[in-house]
Length: 563
Image: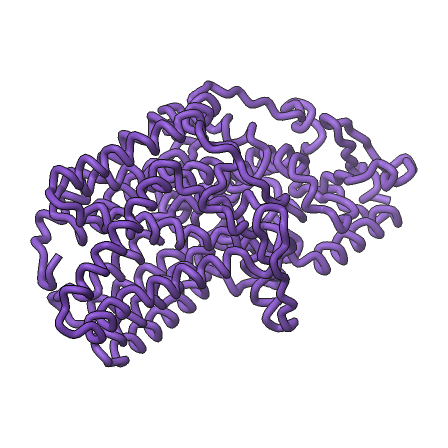
């Protein structure tokens, strides 16, 4: 596409067509059942991170309004918790919190969010590919590959906020349209800043990915214009908007540790772009280490095959351009101005995804011992394997850009159609497995009977888990079972499963609660639940014990408060 302005009306229509195509693809993979906002059994029955995210919304909905926005009260003895750390997509949660008075008692937006992500990916990728081809059919065919990307399908439904990989594609689109003549001079600065701010309100792992793509944008801009003013302004504005948004949404609130365990475990293997990990109907899984499913970056057989063809096309076109040029050196430099930033971004994203321990199959290639200060920062993004998505979508873009250069529009469309067919056939079993799981009608039943909990919690205003052990994050099932009733009965909890925790405060608070209990100063308004039954105090006549599912709960008798 030549430098200039495009017709916005056409772009809007292309985006809409891609979005509609994405929404049509969604039920083909996941069915319609998850789109019912009053159906939450599938979320409660999952019992892992997906359930945590749903409870994040339930707790946010019942919480008072706070500033910073999105703070959740009543689920931690350490104080209010940012909804960012329950992965409930804060911006969406706040939107529906506003509408809460008119919503049904049981309401979930996770299914609708996933549909929205498919629509955004379809529309965004179609517009991105329009940068290289004026054929709407070509662009829409390519959008199918982006929308049904294995990395998106893998994340749904497990880390549904991370299904917003259209954020990465949108960043690549900003890069691809770098030389577009915007109506307003500072439009690119506004777009980058807004995108990064939006990423904070969805999932903060997208922020480093945006900066990785922005690096390519900045390098290209400097190499081609030999000016750094706009690039510096773009970086500065984006950084300021990101930090402000983080503050507004409570990322810096509280005393929880931003670091997390698992750095190096949830990385990406250097074979990840070609490793189906059992999700291909044709390619066998390659060896990898435990935890590296977090760095899943399989491109799909259709895109791998098209990538080989695209490489040949790219080399042929480059050689042809250089050999026909009068000045070899100037032509080579011009090509390098485009290719060099792309190569650097691809290499850095792959390195970041693999860090700090580079692995190929079951072999450790290198291991970097970072300084303590650097390691503390890296631990914030312990699941570094997710950064492979920058490579995946940048390679997707390059492949379709190369296919668009095939001689004749029909030839390019035929090549794209063949790529899509091979891709869908390769992932057919993967999609079928997802459809069987999520299209089915799941019925959830809490392991704790409603009547039993109602009787045990009569008059209580909080649930206190005692004493909090070091491995307290391993008790997800217990938190979810009691969390459902905490929401239903309006009870507070001293502990819940969140991404960041202040264990020191939780431990100190639970020890104080436990000492008060065994010393006869227990709270008659608390329902005490024990991690280990050996910690249950000896019955002194003032305790009432209840068996709630597989757990033992204790209430202090009212008579104790009058003695």
